Amino acid sequence: MQTDPAGQQFDVVIVGSGASGGWAAKRLTDAGLRVAVLEAGRALTDADYTEHIPAHALPYRGRTKAPLASTRPVQSQSYAVREWNADWYVNDVEEPYIDDSDPEFVWVRPRIVGGRMNIWGRGCLRMSDIDFKAASYDGAGVDWPITYAELKPYYNLVEAYVGVSGMTEGLAQYPDGPFQPPMGLTCNEFAVRNRVREAFGYTITQGRTANLTRPLNGRQACHYCGPCEHGCVTHSYFSSAFTTMKDALDTGRCTLVTGAMAYQVLMDPKTRRARGVLYIDRVTRQPKEIFGRAVALCAQTLESVRMLFNSATRQDPAGLANSSGLLGKYLMTHFAGAGASGELPDLVEQPSMGKPNRPCGLVTPRFRNLPGGPTSSGFLRGYAFSTSVGAGVNLAAPGFGDAYKQAVRQPRPATLSFAGFGECLPYADNTCTVDRSVVDAFGIPVVRLHLTPRENERALQRDMATHAAEILDRIGATRIRQTFGMRGQAHEVGAARMGTDPKSSVLTPFLQTHDVRNLFVMDGSSFPSSAWQNPTLTIMALAVRSTDFLLEQLRTGDV
Image (cartoon, rainbow, N blue to C red; front, side, top):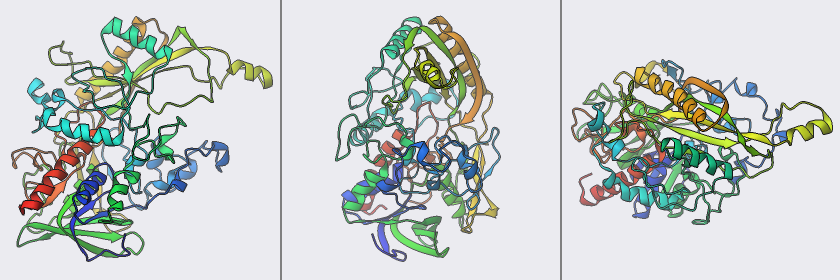
């Protein structure tokens, strides 16, 4: 690390140190290149992790978010933002955004090395050709310009390095990988799995998670303490901060620039090539420039698209890499909030507050509108269920003192819940743009966001609730309760989609911008469709593939 790398020349300048930025830095430095990584936040150490700090040790006992609202009124709406870790996140007052979505979309933004990899849900699900070629099946949107066979080697590489725990199931819509041993299901979870498979043919399995069950590369196996979003001193879950970024820094060829608010891609108007990045120093508020033979935006979908719009020039008045006019369009996420839960009277459990906390739940992979299967009326594509089975502690039990202690220890029927999360179709008017009339504390025009579900997504949500109740009723559940909510997940993808035609896409299949040969966008911006799976594993696999392509282009002089 250098004190002030501003003005220096590197082989590649990377914006962002998260899922894709970490992988790009690792692959490029492993190949011998000099890389600079711009990160808007600060670096964490193990001393910043709070997963072992009990609630009673905190000033507000973790019981209220009210004190967070003065500086983080938006961030504090996320389940992951708590008294333990609130200072990891953006100050919403200093760095606002404009949200025209309905319902409101909560954009979760950490400002730390590794970004959302420090607090992500760690779901690692592969996509398949059912997803990559979905438009060929149902006519909605466009196909991806790649196949599963092309991405499979990169899925394998990433999963082996990350350390993904899971069960092999042999499902076409849920491809298997080189998993670490699964964490195991409880007896009641196995019972539910068997009942649902017998009644409907669906598979309930352990969620595939980036948590180790065996040591890997100096990282320890998970010890089931629970709150992964507070950090991990044993490095048992995957975060780029202590894996890919650490590897890159250990080569001595990576310069990490923290507190760097990336603003614009610098362009050479004569050659039409990117020559570096303009950023604002978070401490001094001074603009600085850093230079590279190539630039890779890995800042997260909304931030990378924001940079491209803010990089508009006389030659590119509508935004950089936007000759197609599609930059910022077809933004997608997963919508959740609908499902059902019920009690299984014959599956009784002894509640406990001290048992190990498995860092992943169960998942019921997509079962609607699969090729060769029945077609659902009212909507295209499908959804999965985040599934849980267990008897929690009844803290509302009657009595006081010893009577209360005895009451909360009483065996209880297991509760089975299905919480849906479904695919969002691509719509041209679901957009990420910038509002030049509003700037943040660093003088950078802010994101204007419109990410609203339509009738297809609302029909999916209704089916999540009604079908979850049907499953529960069929397998003998009682006291069934449905939810019909609608909320967006922190899975923003699209808005700079890939394709082979420069007139109908922003990026090539290797995530190179059509308009600027040495400018790449390696995060979720590239997705032509959202599919139903959590996107991070695919983001990482695509980033490795794109970086390998960039390396070859640099070697031959084509970039």
